[in-house]
Image 1 (tube, rainbow, N blue to C red):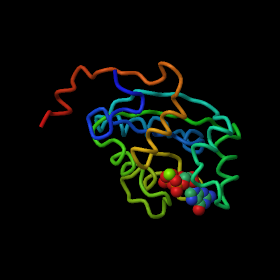
Image 2 (cartoon, rainbow, N blue to C red):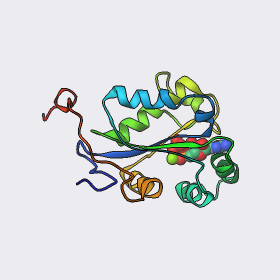
Image 3 (cartoon, helix red, strand yellow):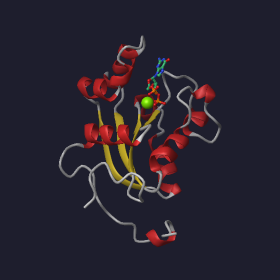
Image 4 (cartoon, protein in one colour):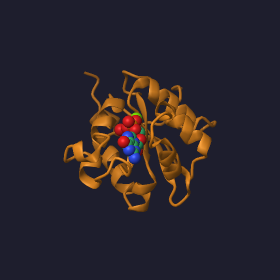
Length: 165
Ligand code: GDP
Ligand code: MG
């Protein structure tokens, strides 16, 4: 049994990735899932929801003093489109996930990253990824804290994706 937040530094490291409402509205859910899936990462948590305001305020607590905070919370919670929250598992997935997501400002994001390929504006940057082991632990707990919401399972072909050395 793995703790819901995974085991950072192991093949059972876990991160929280979300497609934000603009990404859902633009039909990019499958694109985001596909990139993590094809890379070899394992989907261990998945939900679609209009998140409660409290959840988003906690999720973005470090930004609460920013001038864009209220707009950010509204955009995430107003229900014009839901959020797709995910937990992904695999080697170095926290750092690799951030690299796959790309820079916060899409105009600084490299082509080949999700933000660098699909968006133009920091306020509509379509995807979220935990930025550290600490934030992954906190965010997985916030979004997937209910019993059984994160699932331990094994790939049948794991030996063809992850080698022991
Ligand atoms: P992230 O970890 O790359 O998502 O970036 P941050 O943690 O710094 O910010 C969280 C989210 O707040 C970003 O993904 C944006 O959606 C939003 N955000 C950050 N900076 C700005 C800004 O300057 N303007 C606006 N409108 N939104 C911002
Ligand atoms: Mg962040």
